[in-house]
Image (cartoon, rainbow, N blue to C red; front, side, top):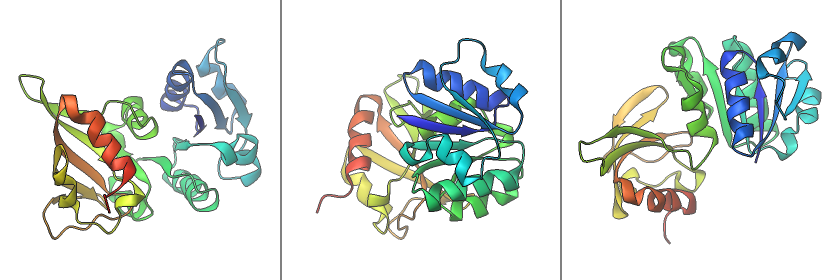
Length: 218
């Protein structure tokens, strides 16, 4: 898949190298040309000097064929603007925005944009949201058979009761929405951008992901 990364600091450059190593095509945008030195001589992706919310820059970066975008500059306002342009103008469903002020999480998530607060911000957590089959285990029991995984719910589930997902091989135990946590029960309906915490046997993670991708059975 093709991924656009806006911001070539420590996190952005790490993401770019990891994604290209997995065989993805990557375009990195930054306002400063010297920022691309962090990518190293062997980087095979595209680099573009410019402002990440400029549509012309995004088009040059391949936004029209991109499957995901990560806005990881050092400014919250820039990141939310970049993320909104990607999601609303170009229809990119997998958008992750870096956040420094945790209080702004609700604003981001109301727009259906996944965020991670700076205190827990790592390239690994961003990769979970960009690469669909990337393991995202939050907790494992002592036998390594039972795990709790984090998943961003797909649009196909919007409006459905979250407990409907319990009919498969897993059990939804919690929901993160607008920066707040909810216990999953029959009263909770799935909303766009919800992040689910799901208990599942490690052997059944693939089956869970297939159900999340397919949507409810009619």
